[in-house]
Image (tube, rainbow, N blue to C red; front, side, top):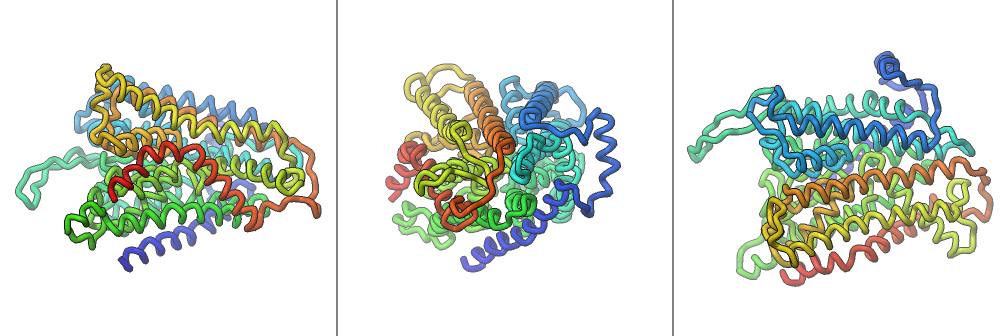
Length: 571
């Protein structure tokens, strides 16, 4: 236990060791300062020239959103067409079939919005062509989209009064060429040298220690897995994701993949401090996010290490903790750490089966996605935090009798209306979807949705409800992990979660970018003795309280019906 605990502490410290200088580097790249990747300038100019992009053209916040939404629509159509025709295209050595229209609809949206909610198994549901030309491509561009969006916020906060907030296409391109690609190459090399396949060979025939002959899927997985984690995407090359021994061969690769998926979300927090020259604010935000992570992680680790009390009551030794659904090469502590980090950010990759987690751990995983702002995904996590920060500023200002201001800009009714709507959107999508699916299970179990509602759940009762709640929470939070006892590859789940993923991705981008644009155009008010300071520990605690209270008010009744009821039944 002590060794495993040291393992996750070292993993987090190494993450910080990489994230802080990476944040400074990201700030330099987008401030136009000299960096070690300036050799990419000719390649970037070539991209701008062939795409008829003027990199010197400044955009306002509305133009940023038009560019972002338009190019994402093009990518969706491209992905959908490839997925429904993949079976008849090249680079398909295993002869996998094309996806059905409803599955292709879900998959295209899922990877487009950085969710990667996979209703298919990677070995059999996609080809090498669709894995690389569609899914890996979308994992790059969806991550770059989120970072480009948060850079609009950076530009809005650094300038006193302006409507010119940079160029979306410049932000997007430099994110790919200067940040994602170089780091992905390093991660892919580390994985491939530790046993992750990186060839275009088809299935391999092997004989197991038991003497069974089995077919093992392979393919160019190392690069795919690198951007899967670095971009907080989470989609697995293999169906078992990072619990698969070829996707995550050993404890070293487990640390590499854990660090990879957290470094940019944390680095962006520090990049904000460097970019707007307010490091104390960045430290405050990082402190709140880390406190939120520990609030969820500590109960999870304790619960998973202690094991299942129902088994202990039978007199079975629980010294190894809860090992169902986990890999012996990783253990319960590393799996618990992964399960929380992957749900508080939007990765959603797994190195253990979350459906096998204890009720307490499952509830913490759900809360990580329900709050959806402790580190969060690429750029969007910081945008989600910005919404709660605006609400906290407004409430704090009212409590102490001061005009709500953030970095010299007044928070007025228009900004608060947008922030409130975005804060309420996430619970609405999750709870409405869960209510709809629960209604069909309870009242129309025999309707033909390709798979009848009566057959959706392998686990009825409280845990079955948790599985449906988890699916919509994961879809709305752009996470992609799942309680896989749910039969979700059917028309109902493919269509409904697809709609939830679109709304859960783009509205929380539109709202904060709009607020940032509105604030940027306002008159700058210098700080005075009456200014509410937002870079103090006191305000950080206030923001943390706002996040947790909103999550509790919105989700506690649903959690009571699911993991909380299951917890008390277990004990």
